[in-house]
Length: 209
Image 1 (cartoon, one colour):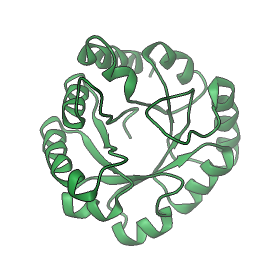
Image 2 (cartoon, one colour):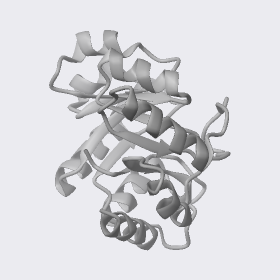
Image 3 (cartoon, one colour):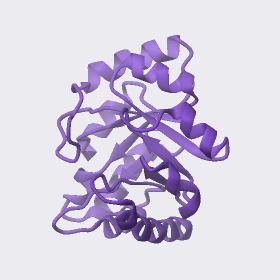
Image 4 (tube, one colour):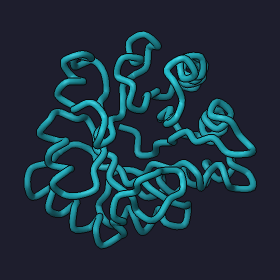
């Protein structure tokens, strides 16, 4: 399990593919292709190019939401939001060879994802973020601390990754809560030098092991 995930996001400066490439150049080895309002026909060509990039860099390639594209595109797995296909159903389709991530906002969501057979949990949002519509309640540092303690005491063993409005300066404090990893998007792409920003985050995470 990689401790650092990059979630694609289109900005005025960078399209989805360029953003993914910048993250990979900066040392991230886990890319989730999220193109929320795009059609399947729009996603497929981008997914194929991102897959090739991930192969080149030795990175994991996860598709957001679209279970049916995982096998056809050759992705490593899928990330499922709370309103997407249930994890159990996705597992029946994809089998045990593919990674399935689940979104959580509460301890109950975390436990549900774990019991459903998810391989990891994306838990958030840490704070307000513009890259996501219909935002769930903000969790914050205290929320993560509480969720991690409770989840571990209840036998949840899979990695739990913090997501949602996280910037480089937040990473050390979030890691102190016991969280297993960090997922980033806008903070990297909005930096003056996204590659360097990602490199610095990679350094923070490797120093925290």
